[in-house]
View 1 (cartoon, rainbow over the protein chains, first blue to last red):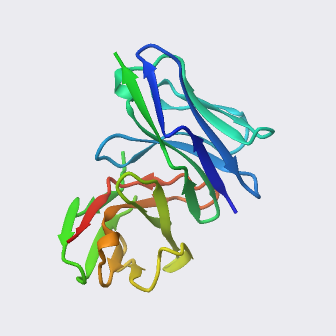
View 2 (view 1 turned 60 degrees about the vertical axis):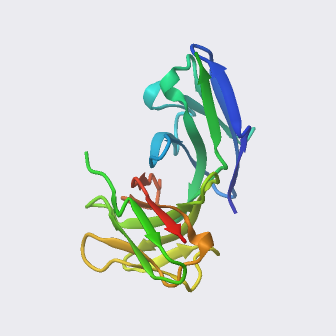
Length: 111
Length: 114
């Protein structure tokens, strides 16, 4: 069985500050891991994904995530937050025919 | 860039009525999915579909739900007799394969059951 835990339902940062959104996963098979972003009243947009290979994955909008097998983590970071980054972020794990999403973390960016 | 489309964007229905939510997946994709998101909650898997049959379904996907690929382009989700708790955003997704399972999501249909 697979599961995802996102630590912190809300994260607030100042514009220009580091963004860190935490995600831990559980998987009985080598996981495929994803981060999605959802802006208000919109669908899900893929930020980045880890399947195999390099453990540091770069995505769109300056985001990156590092797969750490020993810690079963896949935290999302961005060096400098922008106002436009304010959104809901979902970590997800997949295997087989479905994707399991975490509960989401809402990111607030203060001016 | 190809994208998944969904219609309608918003559907309002009375409790007990049947609704059909429509999706057009990306044309060369072979795997199709439905998810739902109740307001303020996480995205939940409903069902996956491949080769004209259900590959996997969750416990949410009970006998009230069905999926169909009626032609070469559409993928539909039918709710036979809607309940108040079916009110949610429903997302369709498609993927080229199940191996790395990068799913491309549509914009969603907001279903409101009165």
